[in-house]
Amino acid sequence: MNLRTLEETIPLGQPTLRQWKINENTTHYERVQAAPSDHDLALMWSLYVGMSIIVTTLVGLVMYSILLDRKARSNPFNQFLIYLMIPDLVLSGSCGFTCLLSAVAGHYWSETMCRLQGFYIPFGIGANNWLNLAVGWEILSLLRASSGFQKYRVPSTERVFFTALAVYAYSCFMASWALWADHFDNFPHRIVSYSGVGCAPLGYSRHSTIFYFLVYFPLLSLIPFFAVLGMGFYIWYYNLMPPTGRRRTLAIFFGRIIAVFTIFRLPSFALGFSGAGSHWLLFAGGSFGHCQGAVSAAISLTKPDIRDAISRLIRCRFRKNDVGQSFSTEFVSFQPSSVGAIELFGRKSDCPEVLSSPRHVEPSQNDLDRSDDANIGVRSDDANIEVVRTCERNTEECNELACWPD
Picture 1 (cartoon, rainbow, N blue to C red):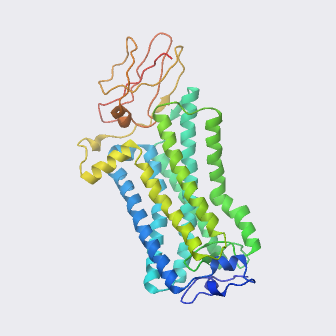
Picture 2: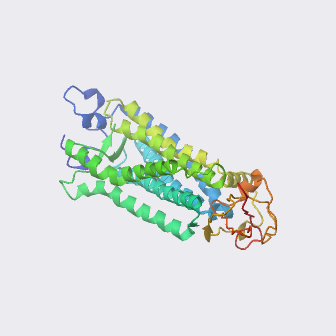
Picture 3: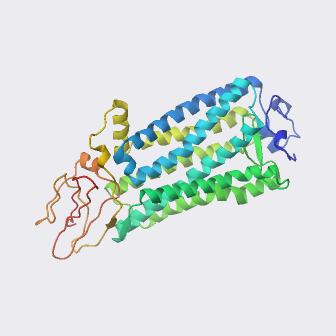
């Protein structure tokens, strides 16, 4: 099937191919594009609208609670989480709007909407993958620094912003490839309909499928995906995960976020290319992928500061001193000690400069929850055990960190 124009594939009014017209001569690509009855199309669009509302609400609630809480939003790893949620909002919100218009009209809305959908779908998927890589790199850098007693600088707000901006710009560039076919007839990548429900850049011939899997998809998703897997293997192989502590909790948290994206998106992608001839099977794949944003939002509740921020938002209770807090981006120094060193999260105090004699202080859960991710360090010499002050700017509160013998 040689598709040269967008008008040949979008399901306006009467789709070009219905599923009851499929026969033994129907190609794999035509099976993916074949549309069901108008009743089933309207039902699938309506279900997509309902799912999009749920996902958008959950993701928006989590993101809004972080933005309202000064301490939560000043944490650079929470800022990465916000930028990870933006593609989810774009995907779920835009898809819900597209499906709502189509359900009301009784057919796919317009050619312009088809082009727009063929753009925001790869943008959301690509942005999520590359941001996962950026977060994975920061986690790896933190674990390597703590394991090798080296300096680690917590990423600043500006650094996180420009990293996300670069990822968004690159994802927009990759998403725009499908639009180039409007200007270059021989470009092997274009937007087509799938199951009459929506539009996405899919393979429409053998050479376009080869181009998709060897060029486009690796640049969009496969390279960051395998890079993150490689980082995970590196952390496991060199045993960089600490047995306990905030760094372990942080690494596991973002590991779950990345795993959820992979678990939910891979089956959706596989079913989209299955060409099984069942529109409900393709619908199940799309629905499974849509649930990723909601599950990621739910997993974010396992992070104590985010859980507290959402609780305060729901109860309309905010800290009085919330405005004055910010996250320190100073260098965190991990240096070896002759007696061995681990971090102890002491209780809030007036930060004494030196502990004359080391004592064991068991951290409470409240101490762990209130301490800032990665803003920790240990420094000692042969003579003294020094408390490293990691005070938040514009506040008098700080954490005590001390060396402790093995």
